[in-house]
Image (cartoon, rainbow, N blue to C red; front, side):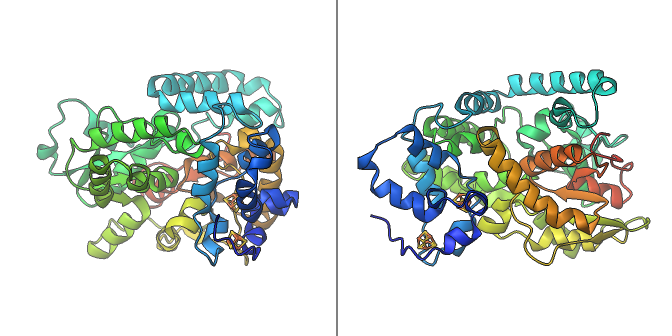
Length: 417
Ligand code: SF4
Ligand code: SF4
């Protein structure tokens, strides 16, 4: 039995319950169902209720009993078939693509080609255009080759005078938006650091873990640990979701003492991009930002950072430190974007309704740029902006900061490039 007090605090903050109003969509409801599942084990409806969770962690953050609700939901999913819930096959295929870097890179290249080729022929509100918005490299940072120089085989890092630092790019940066890596490299070069992407890294495994696929999540984690162990020093991570999941490797490998210990050692070396930049800025004098006309910026908190790791101040501090940017925020907490990893594939209506609520709070602020550090949130925002027919650039914070510091060319003029 869980220690759930049935207080309902989790219901108030649950983005899914706020839309559906169904008790079965709350943490309380799901925990109760887990205890009474003997009545209808693994029925399609039961699996559906556990599938319709973003794993955003908002419930756990307010739970007075400190229940690890995400873990309980993932545990339940581990007992389902590989294609459980609505959109089960789509989610399964997406997870398989993420687990195979070559396939993902090929899909990214194909998508970019299709996006460029079809652009003149699609209407602004075409559903296909909204999907293809993901592939448009509107954040492309031309002339910014710092990372490319550091990862070219045979590069003499010692000659450049820079200290090498390992970088975990994550699937989206690797396959879809490589300019994020370039921007990160440019930012850390201010502190005499050169990023290198260790050969052989794979997906962090968050999608497999969230689906309850323990074996795949474990295999990806162990692979990454082996690769990262071949490097020394800090490991920079620029994607919030990847960072949160890498941070969870010791928990994931808790039952294997050797791997658990190796994961603990790796976590000690992790550096989250914005926290790292803030620390560096306090230690040394960065290149002075180039003054530009102030632009209104909305920063979207990834749920992993807001509810799990409480990394909310550094990104805001970095934005406020740029003379060319003005941080705009709604009075109340804006909340989840509805992406939830692969949640949006299985629950497009719920995902869309959660996103609509967010847009209602953010668009009246008239942001001129929307930024975040989570690849999933950026994808959701790109599609939202395209769907609304707006031209607001949606960019990773690294690209925005690099541009503001005068270290690269201007980021895209709109989500469609
Ligand atoms: S993790 Fe998020 S979506 Fe899932 S039950 Fe908790 S608050 Fe609701
Ligand atoms: S907040 Fe925690 S204790 Fe309260 S109902 Fe939800 S899960 Fe149970």
